[in-house]
Length: 71
Image 1 (cartoon, rainbow, N blue to C red):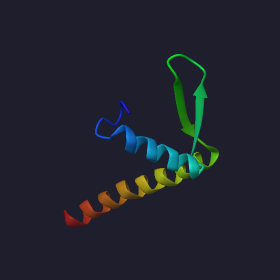
Image 2 (image 1 turned 90 degrees about the horizontal axis):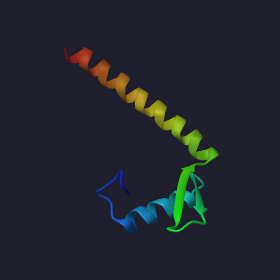
Image 3 (image 1 turned 45 degrees about the vertical axis):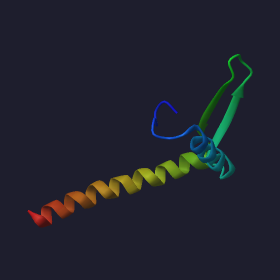
């Protein structure tokens, strides 16, 4: 929530629940006062992150290629 100030608490909760339902993240609740919850990538989430990293790399390489063609 602190890292995405534009998002409402309701929207963040929906997104986190959906990612958890999709098995991309794991939710860990700590029995503390005040309550604390941590989210981390699941095994499938880590695999998906690798795919996204490759898409990002492609994007950078593609933009560089376009710049060369337009120069």
